[in-house]
Amino acid sequence: MQLTRLDEVWSAITFFYISPLRSNLHTSHIKMTFNASDLEFCDEILGKVSRSFAAVIRQLPPTLLVDVLVFYLVLRALDTIEDDMTAFASNDEKVQHLRNFHETALKDSNWCLDGVGEGDERRLLQQFRRCHSIYAALSPDAKNIIADITKRMAEGMAEFVDKDMGQGTVDMQEYGRYCHFVAGLVGEGLSRLFSASKLEHASLANELQLSDNMGKFLQKTNIIRDYLEDYEDGRAYWPQTVWKKYSKGDLGYFKQQRLAPNKAASLHCLNELVTDALELVPDCLKYLSSLQCREVFRFCAIPQVMAIATLEKCYNNPDVFTGVVKIRKGLTCKLINQATELEGVHEIFYGFALSIARKSDPIDRSYERTLAICTKIVGLTKPSCSGISLQRYLWSAASVGAVAAAAMFSPQGKKMIITLGTLFPILLTRNMFIVAKGSLLKSADEILNN
Ligand code: MG
Image 1 (cartoon, helix red, strand yellow):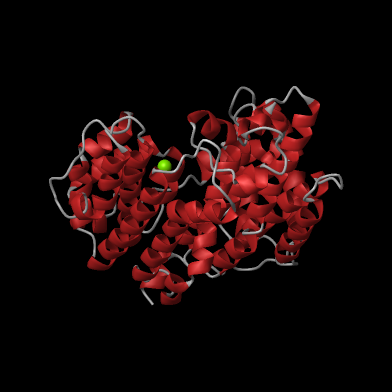
Image 2 (cartoon, rainbow, N blue to C red; image 1 turned 60 degrees about the vertical axis):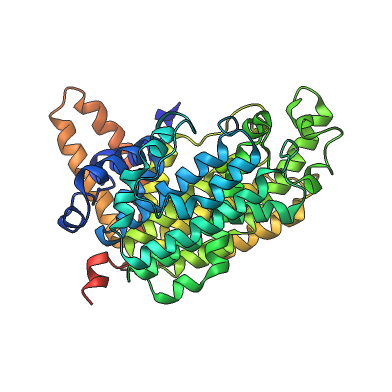
């Protein structure tokens, strides 16, 4: 199946062999600042608890990488406490742990917690002192930012501990509030870390609405995609004021996909939530367009393009109610490769917004709203004559050449050359009409040496 998508195969080759994300973890700046064995522990845990985020964190500039790595692990530890439904004797005990976390875990260098969470997350809490050792060696600015966000997120989580989430959040306001606490605040914290590192303008730290909506966009996408898993865990987030318009029973009504009325109603509900999430896109694009550092841009843009791809896949898709909707690996590689420049990101959002608009149907109750936001996104991302950079074009050409040369020496050389012969004109025509335009992003070195 996957082999029929030449573009994606090509992207996978580029991603794995030609320009993989390079790790900056072993640079001298980092080696001199942090305890090597504790850092190795943090990096190892990061790779285990989040494969997708690990690579984008590791490619960050050395002066920012460890801040973000520790920020991620601290919040992950907090989330492990939030998610554990059996370890604590009472909700009050859990709330105590959450509320004290910034005072205990972040101030006491020997703090640890046993028997909470599972697998590598449990290990992170058990050996938290190794994470603390790295945290303690960060700059005072970075520590303050991480402690502030951790404290506020924990307060927010504590607010939800006592709530019965079996039937989702109460309304759009509560849904938004939850997303703000667990994801919007991450956006704020990251922006402040970017500014503190001087890789981004100081003003970015104050763009609170934009950073909040960036985080919410990712969180709402996950909540939409994870309907079934969350519902079965008894911790659902779909807002009641939305789903009650469509359900003739409880939130589990949408699971019964064999009944025609349920099927239609569930899709209308799903599409309303996808539309609501899409309405955050203009702010996400505005945020991305304000970045100047190439590595920071990539770090922010990759999760965003994955989210829009996931929303497009979820839109009007009954599979959301019966299993897990995932985007193809080849498509993931393609998106990651393309998310290096604003133009590439625009191209992606443009394509997916158009695709959702094409799938929308006048019988859908959110049809007009969906069409309105898709039209807006298309307008914001329409390809201008500047499209893709010359650099990317030359990369494609040089890479095709290199692979073709390698193919001549392999036993299946002929076949490969035929494939590439088909592939090359596709790439060429796609990139040919584009006027060369230099990148607007700068490398970390260029920014810091100025
Ligand atoms: Mg959680």
